[in-house]
Length: 202
Image 1 (tube, helix red, strand yellow):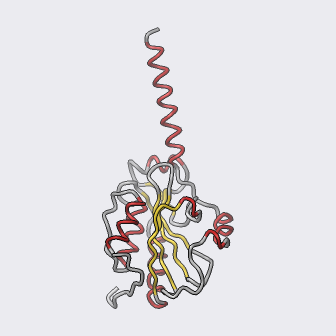
Image 2: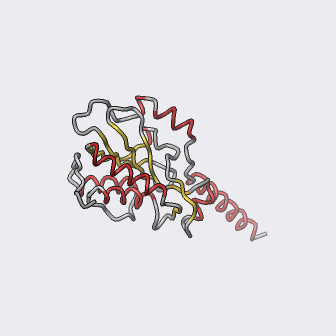
Image 3: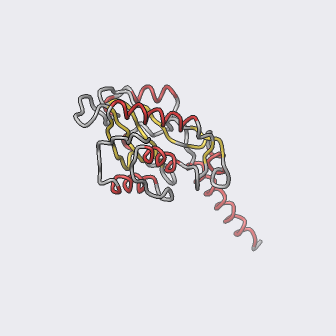
Protein backbone atom coordinates (compact mmCIF):
# COMPACT_ATOMS: atom_id res chain seq x y z
CA UNK A 1 0.00 0.00 0.00
CA UNK A 2 2.86 2.37 0.75
CA UNK A 3 4.12 2.01 -2.82
CA UNK A 4 0.82 3.18 -4.36
CA UNK A 5 1.48 6.94 -3.85
CA UNK A 6 4.95 6.49 -5.36
CA UNK A 7 3.53 4.69 -8.39
CA UNK A 8 0.90 7.39 -8.84
CA UNK A 9 3.53 10.11 -8.66
CA UNK A 10 5.69 8.32 -11.22
CA UNK A 11 2.71 7.93 -13.56
CA UNK A 12 1.93 11.64 -13.26
CA UNK A 13 5.56 12.54 -13.92
CA UNK A 14 5.71 10.27 -16.97
CA UNK A 15 2.48 11.75 -18.33
CA UNK A 16 3.74 15.30 -17.83
CA UNK A 17 7.06 14.49 -19.55
CA UNK A 18 5.26 12.99 -22.55
CA UNK A 19 3.04 16.05 -22.83
CA UNK A 20 6.07 18.36 -22.83
CA UNK A 21 7.82 16.27 -25.49
CA UNK A 22 4.72 16.36 -27.67
CA UNK A 23 4.62 20.14 -27.40
CA UNK A 24 8.30 20.38 -28.39
CA UNK A 25 7.78 18.80 -31.79
CA UNK A 26 8.39 21.04 -34.79
CA UNK A 27 5.70 20.48 -37.41
CA UNK A 28 6.51 21.39 -41.02
CA UNK A 29 4.07 23.76 -42.69
CA UNK A 30 2.14 22.37 -45.59
CA UNK A 31 2.59 23.85 -49.07
CA UNK A 32 -0.96 25.20 -48.87
CA UNK A 33 -0.22 27.06 -45.62
CA UNK A 34 2.98 28.50 -47.05
CA UNK A 35 1.31 29.69 -50.25
CA UNK A 36 -1.56 31.33 -48.37
CA UNK A 37 0.64 33.12 -45.86
CA UNK A 38 3.25 34.19 -48.38
CA UNK A 39 0.52 35.89 -50.37
CA UNK A 40 -0.78 37.89 -47.39
CA UNK A 41 0.85 41.34 -47.25
CA UNK A 42 0.16 41.74 -43.52
CA UNK A 43 2.31 38.66 -42.84
CA UNK A 44 5.39 40.01 -44.57
CA UNK A 45 7.76 42.68 -43.35
CA UNK A 46 9.33 43.23 -46.79
CA UNK A 47 7.80 46.04 -48.83
CA UNK A 48 8.22 47.12 -52.41
CA UNK A 49 10.49 50.00 -53.24
CA UNK A 50 13.07 49.59 -50.49
CA UNK A 51 15.94 52.03 -51.00
CA UNK A 52 18.37 49.79 -49.11
CA UNK A 53 18.79 47.10 -51.74
CA UNK A 54 16.79 45.15 -54.28
CA UNK A 55 17.32 41.78 -52.51
CA UNK A 56 17.49 40.70 -48.90
CA UNK A 57 18.25 37.91 -46.45
CA UNK A 58 16.41 38.14 -43.15
CA UNK A 59 17.84 36.12 -40.25
CA UNK A 60 14.90 35.35 -37.98
CA UNK A 61 14.00 33.59 -34.73
CA UNK A 62 10.59 32.56 -33.48
CA UNK A 63 9.03 30.97 -30.47
CA UNK A 64 8.50 27.24 -30.17
CA UNK A 65 7.29 25.08 -27.30
CA UNK A 66 10.85 24.50 -26.12
CA UNK A 67 14.04 26.05 -27.45
CA UNK A 68 12.75 28.18 -30.31
CA UNK A 69 13.73 28.08 -33.97
CA UNK A 70 16.06 30.08 -36.25
CA UNK A 71 15.64 30.35 -40.01
CA UNK A 72 15.99 32.79 -42.91
CA UNK A 73 13.64 34.59 -45.22
CA UNK A 74 15.12 35.62 -48.56
CA UNK A 75 13.82 37.25 -51.70
CA UNK A 76 13.33 40.47 -53.61
CA UNK A 77 12.16 43.63 -51.83
CA UNK A 78 9.79 44.55 -54.66
CA UNK A 79 7.92 41.23 -54.41
CA UNK A 80 5.57 39.89 -51.75
CA UNK A 81 6.70 36.31 -52.26
CA UNK A 82 9.22 35.07 -49.71
CA UNK A 83 11.36 31.96 -49.61
CA UNK A 84 12.15 30.26 -46.31
CA UNK A 85 15.09 28.07 -45.36
CA UNK A 86 15.83 26.46 -42.02
CA UNK A 87 16.92 23.16 -40.55
CA UNK A 88 14.41 21.04 -38.63
CA UNK A 89 13.97 17.33 -37.90
CA UNK A 90 11.75 15.62 -40.49
CA UNK A 91 8.51 14.36 -39.03
CA UNK A 92 6.86 14.94 -35.70
CA UNK A 93 7.68 14.17 -32.07
CA UNK A 94 9.87 11.07 -32.27
CA UNK A 95 12.56 12.50 -34.63
CA UNK A 96 12.75 15.64 -32.49
CA UNK A 97 13.31 13.61 -29.32
CA UNK A 98 15.81 11.25 -30.97
CA UNK A 99 17.63 14.24 -32.43
CA UNK A 100 18.84 15.12 -28.93
CA UNK A 101 20.69 11.80 -28.85
CA UNK A 102 21.75 11.17 -32.45
CA UNK A 103 21.35 12.47 -36.01
CA UNK A 104 17.91 12.22 -37.61
CA UNK A 105 16.63 13.03 -41.13
CA UNK A 106 16.03 16.72 -41.68
CA UNK A 107 13.86 19.15 -43.60
CA UNK A 108 15.14 22.51 -44.82
CA UNK A 109 12.06 24.40 -45.97
CA UNK A 110 9.49 26.39 -44.01
CA UNK A 111 8.20 24.88 -40.79
CA UNK A 112 5.00 25.71 -38.96
CA UNK A 113 5.12 29.28 -37.60
CA UNK A 114 7.92 30.60 -39.84
CA UNK A 115 5.48 32.87 -41.70
CA UNK A 116 3.51 34.04 -38.67
CA UNK A 117 4.66 37.44 -37.36
CA UNK A 118 3.12 36.86 -33.92
CA UNK A 119 5.75 34.19 -33.21
CA UNK A 120 8.73 36.33 -34.25
CA UNK A 121 11.22 37.06 -31.45
CA UNK A 122 14.23 38.48 -33.36
CA UNK A 123 15.11 39.64 -36.86
CA UNK A 124 18.21 40.91 -38.62
CA UNK A 125 17.70 41.88 -42.27
CA UNK A 126 20.56 42.60 -44.65
CA UNK A 127 20.31 43.79 -48.24
CA UNK A 128 22.16 42.71 -51.36
CA UNK A 129 22.62 43.84 -54.93
CA UNK A 130 21.53 41.48 -57.68
CA UNK A 131 24.90 39.76 -58.44
CA UNK A 132 25.57 39.11 -54.75
CA UNK A 133 21.99 37.95 -54.17
CA UNK A 134 22.32 35.36 -56.92
CA UNK A 135 25.42 33.94 -55.22
CA UNK A 136 23.89 33.95 -51.76
CA UNK A 137 20.57 32.46 -52.87
CA UNK A 138 22.44 29.74 -54.78
CA UNK A 139 24.43 28.98 -51.63
CA UNK A 140 21.24 28.74 -49.56
CA UNK A 141 19.74 26.30 -52.08
CA UNK A 142 22.95 24.26 -52.05
CA UNK A 143 22.94 24.21 -48.23
CA UNK A 144 19.33 23.04 -48.24
CA UNK A 145 20.20 20.22 -50.62
CA UNK A 146 23.28 19.14 -48.65
CA UNK A 147 21.85 19.15 -45.10
CA UNK A 148 20.31 15.67 -44.76
CA UNK A 149 20.42 15.39 -40.96
CA UNK A 150 19.49 17.36 -37.84
CA UNK A 151 20.94 17.11 -34.34
CA UNK A 152 20.09 19.38 -31.42
CA UNK A 153 23.71 19.88 -30.39
CA UNK A 154 25.62 20.07 -33.67
CA UNK A 155 23.74 20.32 -36.96
CA UNK A 156 20.93 22.50 -35.68
CA UNK A 157 18.99 25.56 -36.85
CA UNK A 158 21.49 28.13 -35.56
CA UNK A 159 24.43 26.41 -37.21
CA UNK A 160 22.41 26.35 -40.44
CA UNK A 161 21.71 30.09 -40.55
CA UNK A 162 25.24 30.72 -39.24
CA UNK A 163 26.64 29.03 -42.33
CA UNK A 164 24.65 31.44 -44.49
CA UNK A 165 25.81 34.46 -42.50
CA UNK A 166 29.42 33.30 -42.69
CA UNK A 167 29.18 32.85 -46.46
CA UNK A 168 27.96 36.45 -46.66
CA UNK A 169 31.04 37.64 -44.79
CA UNK A 170 29.27 38.40 -41.50
CA UNK A 171 30.75 37.73 -38.08
CA UNK A 172 28.89 34.85 -36.47
CA UNK A 173 28.28 33.97 -32.79
CA UNK A 174 28.65 30.47 -31.36
CA UNK A 175 25.79 28.12 -32.15
CA UNK A 176 25.07 26.97 -28.58
CA UNK A 177 22.54 29.59 -27.62
CA UNK A 178 18.84 30.11 -28.03
CA UNK A 179 17.74 31.19 -31.53
CA UNK A 180 16.51 34.57 -30.30
CA UNK A 181 19.86 35.27 -28.61
CA UNK A 182 21.72 33.99 -31.66
CA UNK A 183 19.99 36.38 -34.08
CA UNK A 184 20.35 39.32 -31.71
CA UNK A 185 24.05 38.50 -31.22
CA UNK A 186 24.52 38.23 -34.98
CA UNK A 187 23.08 41.72 -35.41
CA UNK A 188 25.13 43.16 -32.56
CA UNK A 189 28.41 41.60 -33.73
CA UNK A 190 27.91 43.21 -37.14
CA UNK A 191 26.82 46.58 -35.69
CA UNK A 192 23.43 46.29 -37.34
CA UNK A 193 25.05 46.54 -40.77
CA UNK A 194 22.33 46.48 -43.41
CA UNK A 195 24.04 46.41 -46.81
CA UNK A 196 26.30 43.47 -47.64
CA UNK A 197 28.82 43.27 -50.48
CA UNK A 198 30.43 39.89 -51.05
CA UNK A 199 34.15 39.75 -51.62
CA UNK A 200 35.43 38.51 -54.97
CA UNK A 201 36.98 35.47 -53.22
CA UNK A 202 33.64 34.03 -52.10
